[in-house]
Amino acid sequence: MKSRFTIFLAILFTLCSGLNMGQGQISTDSLDTALRALKDPDKKVDLILGFLEKPENQYLVNAVGLANRAFVIAQQNNYAIGKIQAMIKLGNCYFRTSDYKKAMELAQKAKEISEDLGYEKELANSLILIGIIYSELGDFDNSSQCFFKGLNLFEKLGDKEGIARSLGNIGLDFYDQQYYVKALEYYNNSLVIAKAIDNQALIKKQYNNIAAAYSDLQKYDTAITCFRKALAISIKLGDKLGQGTNIMNIGYIQMNEGNYPDALQSFQKSLDFATEMNHRMHIAECYLNFGFCNFMAGKKDESAAYFKKALKEGQENNYFKIISSASKMLNQIYTEKKDTIAAYKYVTLEKLSGDSLFAFQKQRLSSKLELQYLYEKKELKRQLAQQAKNTVMLIVIFSLVAGLIILGLVFSRHRLKSKFVVLEKEKISLEKKKIETELDIKNRELTVNLISLIRKNEMLADISKKLMQLETNAKGDETKQAIHKISQDLRNSTDDKMLNEFSLRFQEVHAGFYEKLLQAYPDLSQNELKLCAFLRLNMSTKDIAELTGQQLASIDKARYRLRKKLALPGADTNLVTFLSQV
Image (cartoon, rainbow, N blue to C red):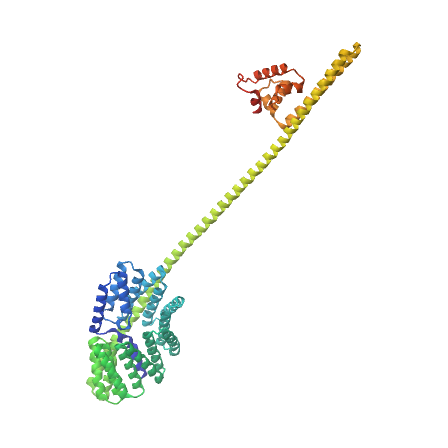
């Protein structure tokens, strides 16, 4: 019985692929009316995606068309996030129709755009879709990687619904690999979060998953309790497809426990829902279940009739698993009845359906290998592009850092140079001030010295005058000569000493003055150089006369001769001004 229950679970996902056109058309008409009332293209995209997000609308026959419509509007109006969400939704729609290649292409493209634009939630959703595709193809290594990456992103964003969905998908991976205890751990963690956020659809899904795991562990009481909880939510949500599936699951457990009458009632209720919705796969599955239940109850003829109905549905819709199961059971029944012709007929059908299933599984394997190749190729290409991008970024960053360092060094050097120049200027200024101070002091000393010399000269002139008076009043010639000689020696000795001292002082204050004059005018005599020095000090003719003991007329004549030697034109050029510039 466990094997038959496993067959049901393997096709349970396929049950969701065909709501009737009537129900879908009514909802679509309402959507079209709402869309016509909207002017904003972005809001139209959001409305379509929100419509498809509802559990009752996810399996509409025109879901692909609606998702593609949202994608086209978003693309035409550069609505980036809407475009990504539409691609993910469209990928989910293609997945439900078993077009895994298109689903993977859309999921990968959505993943790349989300990474480039930094949309982490959309990136997580695209990873979940890629993981679901790999899981369906049996590539659990890649699927688990995607699921855990998506889980990490949802945890980072604090998106509890995303976390719950990721945990449930990881649980499905473990379930498909028959790690039921580990699967239950993730299912229960997902259920806790789903209850915390009161997401009824997600709660129902996890109850179904938990029940399936307990059924495979042959814990039927716990399994049927979880199925009944899922049924209650389906009724609350008005989900007829969910109600039919939950009731069928309950019927399987009742059949496994040997409670055939209740199982038949459950299968009949499930058939009623499938017939109301015109869900052909669900109808075929119900006929198959009736056949199993009657066969196990020992009603071979009734079971054969239902297996034939299931076989007919399978042949009309190419449900190879239904054909295989029904043919196998009919072969067994007619073999027991020793109807060799009928038995051979059904064993042939079983073989043909088995070949078709094998071809389908082989195609799935090829699809898996192709998707792995395409995904790895695209991932490698993306990684190489990212590495190249990172390399360029590193080069740019390094160049910027190096440029900033160079600019910093240049700026620092400029600042140091400016500071050095300022310090040099300050040093020169200080030295200049020091020299000027020293010159000022020496000028003062020279002035004091000149005043002192002049006073000394005046005093000597007075002494000389008195000596001359003594000489006049003296009676003896010898006395007169002696006084005259004393007066002459005193004047000559004092004049020489005084002028030598003045010359030394002057050269200290005005260094190079004599050298420049002699270089320009080599014919100047010593007396003329001294006269230039006196004039350089802006001394008047009277001061020079008192200092040298000469007559004013003699000084004027000396100045006249000096102007000629210096070749100064006329009286316009001031002699003192000229000498002060030497």
